[in-house]
Each structure stands twice: as C-alpha cells, then as structure tokens.
Image (cartoon, rainbow, N blue to C red; front, side, top):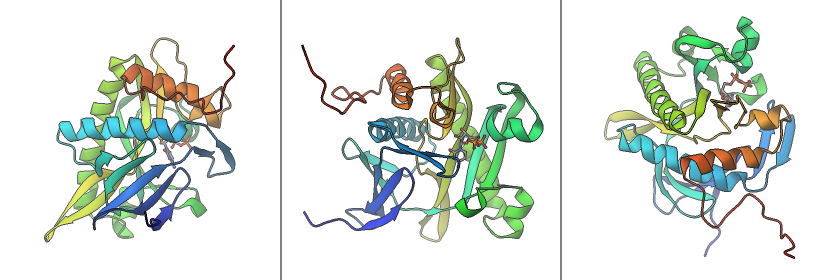
Length: 253
Ligand code: CDP
C-alpha cells in the first residue's frame, strides 16, 4: 500500500489523508502531555482506549441527532472522520468547579455550579489557550454570533448526553472540552462535533469515592493513567475484547 500522506500531527493524534476527498484518517497515539506539553510520557494502550471511547461517544451522539465528524472505526488505533474546518476555539462545559475555574474564582474543586457553564478558550499553544469572551470571539472574527449560539447549543447537548452516559455507570462528569468544526453542504454551513471525546479531555470522578478517572491522574501523578481509562471503558462496556493496556510480554508460570 502506498504510504499515506500525513496532514497534521498533534500532541495525541495524527491526521492522514483519507481514502476519499473530504475524509481524514485519525490515528490515536499513546503520548500523554499536560501543562502545554511541559509534562510528557508514553502511556501504553492509551490510544487504543481513546479510539474506542471516542467512537462510543460520537456514535451515541449521532444516534440522538447531534452531528459529529465520526464516520467509522478502521482498526485499533484509527478512525475515518469527515474533514472539517476547525473553529479555533476550545469549548469547555463545566458542571462542577475544578482546574482553572477553581483557581480563577477561588471555588473549591467539586463545588456544584448553579447550571452548566460554557467557556471558550482560544486554541493557541503559544499563548496557553487563553480564556476568551464572546465579545473577543465576535470582534476578532473567530466565529460569528450565529456560530456561537450553535456552538453553545451543541455543547450543552453533548453535556447532557455525556453526563447521562457517565451517571449510568457511577461517574460524575465534572467538565469536558470539545472542538467544533464547520462543514459545507452546498452554500450552507453546519457545525459538527470534531476532534475526540475521551478521558483526555474530560474530568471524570467516581460518584461514590471521588476517585479521578481522567487525565488529572497523569497531570497530578495520582496513579496509572491506563488503569483509569480502562476502568471507564470497562464500565461503559466498550473495552476491546482482545486488548488490555499492557502491551509488554508477561511471563506465564
Ligand atoms: O485542564 P486544566 O486544569 O488545564 O484546564 P481547565 O480549564 O480546568 O479544563 C477544563 C476541562 O477541559 C478539563 O476536563 C480539561 O481536561 C479540558 N481541557 C482539554 O481537554 N484541553 C485543553 N487544552 C484545556 C482543557
């Protein structure tokens, strides 16, 4: 097979040209980064788990009528996706205070918010993805007012869906980030959920024990990240049957 053309390589994923125009192949790496890539490691099996989990969430969203870029999973680490024009904003939805919101507003982590709060950060690693207001977004032309309204509506639907999925398996969805892309259908544009939905971009706490089952395990050195993601996948019933996160050979007595 001819070597595929790499279109883009990010911190956790690689995009290749897809088999048909308007498609990409999204490859999930095992790389974990935090604090704007100042902390890095390879977590065996993370890419396999995130490929499965993102497939699970995106498929579920499509089933309730939320459009996403996901077309189909190709293999353990790759999925076929629609090519989109990524809006240069990270859309964060928060149900409980944590992370930067706790720091900014002096709220104890885990404080329930009066309602889900949607925030926007500019996607710019050099600037550390700064929080921006709707005024900034409109004034600088990163998105139009109609896009903003659509993005908020989309993000809140994703929040309701993900919160429900997680609640059903004893996990609290504290917050998460999504990215949204534009697709053109004739002269009309539509906004769809893009990138990935996985424990890399969510905060997930066990409802009973408060145990963290997301990337904070890596950010804050709380234990084995692959074990945490495996637990999320296991509870949701999406663990690939023939894979555990251990890829090294183990001796059998
Ligand atoms: O994660 P951090 O404390 O740096 O920032 P946050 O604003 O508290 O993050 C809110 C949520 O968005 C968390 O679930 C993060 O994992 C996620 N996020 C992300 O996936 N990628 C970013 N660049 C920033 C936040």
